[in-house]
Image (cartoon, rainbow, N blue to C red; front, side, top):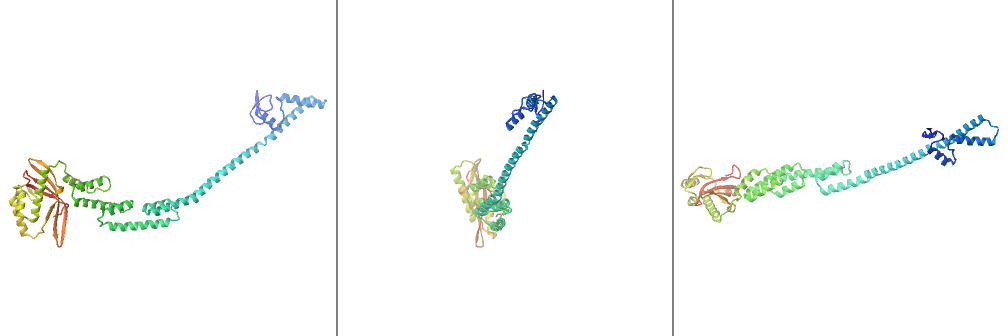
Length: 381
């Protein structure tokens, strides 16, 4: 059988004063030997009292037994009052530890705010000044809105904006591709960037058109595919590239004969040489530029008559023979595409108009059977 220990409330044997743990604690703290059971304690007390006072009666023994038990319990409870002291000591130790941690954390935040933050701000400002770019100043302003260099960063930003506007005004009429590319590389977030990119695309198209070769058109196509150009003219460029790219094998005799016919005809046309034009035209021409088909006699005669009756400007024709592209059309006919530059005199100036492509069909005798042209722009002469 067991009941509750009077000290801690844990279970104890019925014939024991305290539980095992409290018994050990009392014996170690007070250096006393507790009896193994309540009965043993009673016997010890009775024996002691009997030896000293022989006349104590049975009731007196019971009273003494009760007093002895109360004394032991009171002594143990007095000692147990030291428990709160131990708890207080532990609590104080925890509080001191927490205080130390709090001080360390506070010191870190003070270090971060006062020392580290200032170092970071100084580094960010030095980087912005070194870059001297819109992105650099914006990065400083966004990361340090209360920084000591905030006003300077804003002023630097405004100066760059004014500089951007000034540069764009000069680039509007610029013919330099390198200048336009330089602006795009430096001012990657500029509000003028779309305008500069459009200008670069337009200028690159003009360069390809003026060169008027398969190579120049191919270069534009490649830049557009890789994102270096917007590619606003890619459709027209692809068409011209296909016209001038030599896709089929070349026979030297055929190519030389075609070049001879093309060169002779345009030289005669430029000088209005009747016999020369007559020589290089087929007996019947199915198409002569914007007019329909007719005999070579009628075509050459009308050309000479028109030149004599009008004061229209005299146009010269310069085919680029190295750029001639041709293919066999079957039945002994050939189709050739020829890059061409026209020129005329206006006042004291010579006006050059590149970008023409002549489309010429020749028979087996390398006489021109049909001729018309693709203009560089719709109202070109």
